[in-house]
Structure formats: C-alpha cells, structure tokens
Image (cartoon, rainbow, N blue to C red):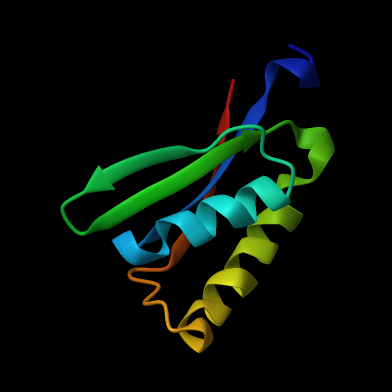
Amino acid sequence: MGEGDLWVEVGAWVSEEAVEAVAEALRGMGASGVIIRPWPNGVQVSTFFPPSQNPERKRRRLERFLGRLSSWGLEPGPGKVWTKVWE
C-alpha cells in the first residue's frame, strides 16, 4: 500500500459555540472540507489530510488554537484534539 492510500483525520471535541471557529481554523490549515458531528457532550469537528501535509504539525496547531479560544470569549468545551490514521 502506498502513502496515497492513507489519510490522517485531525479533529477536536469542542463546545457548540466553538464549532465555527475550529472549522475555520482547520480550513486555514488547508482543509478542503470539515466534518461536524454533534454528540451529547460536545461536537466533533474534523478533517482529513494526506501524510505529506504533516498532519501531526496541524494537530499541534489546532491544540494551540483551542488554547486561545477562551481569550476570545469562546468556551472551548472538552477541547480534546486527536489524529487517526485511515487506510
């Protein structure tokens, strides 16, 4: 299997009020689309990147972004960031 067959999901669990800000942050990192999944204890916002776009670096950027949300008056919610490899 080649690298072109892999995708890495980068996402975060956030509050409803933080969804649009997080989606825009992911778009700013080069995401062509964003997936928004509502859950009882927050909202999952994620996107997919190929390994060549350094998804681990994007995950770290997203963590830093979530850390700044409260300074803008937004409740980050759970604020958990993750990556998952999909083949």
